[in-house]
Image 1 (cartoon, one colour):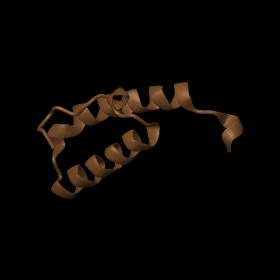
Image 2: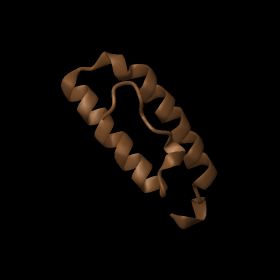
Image 3: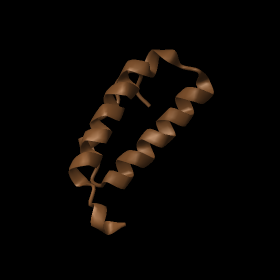
Image 4: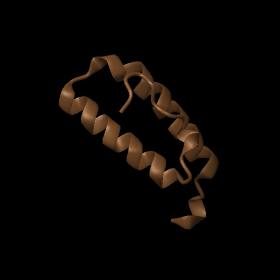
Length: 61
């Protein structure tokens, strides 16, 4: 993982891939207690939630 340079949540082909990436990065950051990644993680999280809101289909559940 590049330091302080996460991709956009929109760079992933699928929403599932973006969520999986976010989950892996959060686990790694928490394991390493890397507080320097906080702003990048929050940016990615905001983009991810925007993408979820755009792509979410409530009838699919």
